[in-house]
Image 1: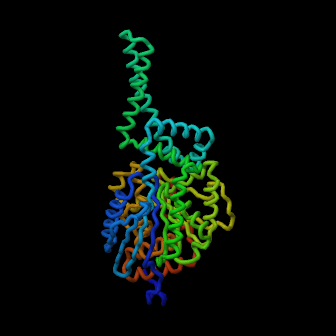
Image 2: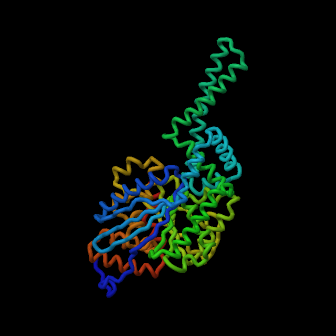
Image 3: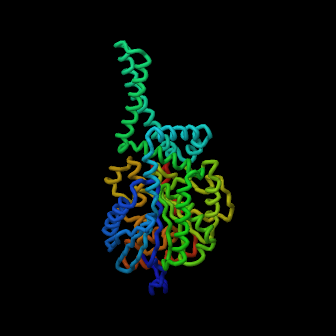
Length: 445
């Protein structure tokens, strides 16, 4: 690879030396301790893959227990990056949801599901992404199977009582008690393998959040928005990246839109601000008729000239919407003013070793978390390069081949890569080129 420019020969390209990450978790009850352990383990893998040094500090938790922070120092032969990492916590709310009585969760979720069916929302989910619609239906299908099995056992028990002369009133009452006990027991003791109660609680939360029936969530998001405003005003970082994974995708858009309300010039002073949504599922909020304010926030971000928004999607991840435009698919028309988001397909087969990929490709939670785990093969999409690397995020997505060369090439190739990155700073990403990162569903089978 050969190229030359006066700037390249002098190494004058802009590189990120200091980055601030604000990470919004999805509906994940595991919380800070497990996330930090995973992050630290994956950071080590990242360092080994690219043969660089990456060290991480211990997390420090704010007095209100809502934000945990740590730092990462990353060093390669010809670059060094300091990263501040803020982890925004919601697990206390999530754990409270999961502590609800089993029968309250089951009946509430079933009632919501049938309302989604009859008001047409499920049909909209299916049209947008049938895999996600199937995923929503999965816990209800498992629940139905478990209920049918318990009903069969209860029916046999009731007939047995009748056979020995027990009156119907008592046999039916006993069979009902057996049915309730069996369903509750099966749900409780199979949860670690089925995730039924967790998923039902998730659907209840999104239904209520879309209707602004979770004021404690809104209040915390408002505080996080204020935190972003303060970071933007005081940070010396070259860029601030707001990362929303899974349900954190729509929480991230909410946080950023509310921060812009607090400070309309948020992206016009201080560090560049980029929103990165990965494995997103915007429709589980936006497709509800009651969520007009959320759609208004999407419209605002779609045209905001001072903010870049990158949305990464993977076909293999059933928990996100693939080949989905978060703006147009919500019926939002911004015409020629639209500039966000840039949609970037991600192909997990290209970032994980084939034998390892085959071992977990049908584990939907493991696949979903690949977005925030270390690569096993160098690739343009690399979560830890986004967090720790020297290439600004918007330019990384605009010139993915150049970003990869900077990570893996020799000195001459890296200089050419930096030239391409510099050129990308003045040109918008080519959507056609980005789409080549992931073959279509028809071509990939």
